[in-house]
Length: 354
Image 1 (cartoon, rainbow, N blue to C red):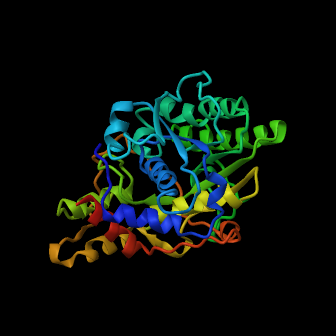
Image 2: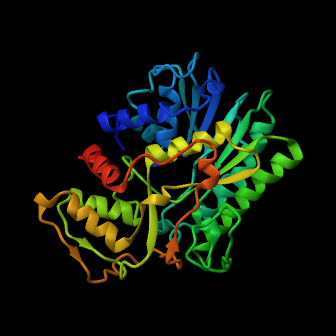
């Protein structure tokens, strides 16, 4: 995967750094980011490394990018690997062992297979990084001489089958059947959250939990398998959008710069041992409305939405929940708000990937 360092991403980094946050808490700190080779992990790495040059911290943040494939990570961060502030370290969070990280101040745990495309083919590889991987990372941080905190990137999937149409608050929970294969993701995220709260309670390590909903932006791959990635690449390839459903499911779509700003708002201002929804609640739409938005962004392409159902992806395990829309009052109480509309965000994503 090549580095994505175009003008769109640079604008995103500047927008994140412009947020009114106590960034100087990170000045000179050593921060581990897991899943650094992924979409959100890469945004987190680039944000941390941009803070000094953008004048937000007095001393550069030292970032340890924890990845499974160092060669791919060096390619992804080819514009940064010669700088002393970035260290790429190989570690597989499926391993039942504690990584040797040395003295670190913060760990941001963003490593996870988030796409349902992988739940059917690699459920073990989906489950372990959120469970034993989370415990191992917390233990590594506990061994550090000056631990400042641990941010766990969870998921809206923890809510399970929730009844009603009101926005989901952080204390609203429904049922997850642990014997269904898709539960490898939701149940492991739930276990990861409980592990964070337990370490905070027993060892007094500050832990924070963020629950992103449908987050999109530059860096998502064609293989991702989620609707916001599939439709984006349909438009990029000048293909009509083929629906995998009747399009009635409703989701709230959040652009990467808003989500990452939310993550840092929680880590730098949030209450430890607490979960926060991170989403653009004002960007709710049905999947059909989303498909129509995407083809409408570039009318010159002459694309349309094909309403036949395509079942050619047997490994994709769809969600059983028709509406996953959050209440973000808790996050907004920290001074955060979403700034990018779906029309703006998806246009930016397509421009960045062209």
